Length: 156
Image: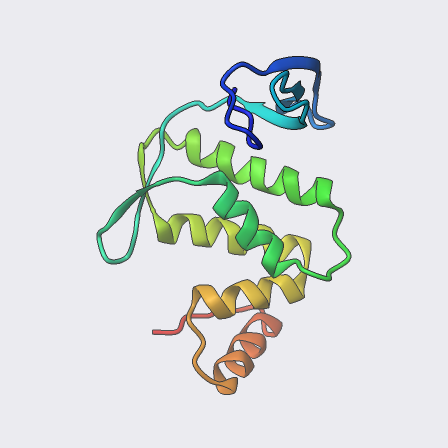
């Protein structure tokens, strides 16, 4: 593993242990070149996933990008970081177990929407505002009215 501070290719593992949810191995590393210490995480990857965007463009699936978008929706909300991590891991496992290597971005967006709806209603609306591309306050009103009435919001 390359040292993120000095670029040295020869770093040493000082400690390894599973994460709290047992989905990754946390490794504390030491660089003998610059004496820096840093942490890495090792996760199981069942398959290489490619995201197919609405434009048809393809991009490698990025777990960190998924986690960031969920964390942004949940910013300043009373949700434990461990729960967020479990949510992200659950979505990734569902995507990997679909049996497809190419996943439409809409599928990922809907999975995140479903997960957030069960975790925090404010984060659900925040994520929806970006995912569904709300353009004005009326879009928020329509969405909130629809979820309060128990229906499915459709912006078409």
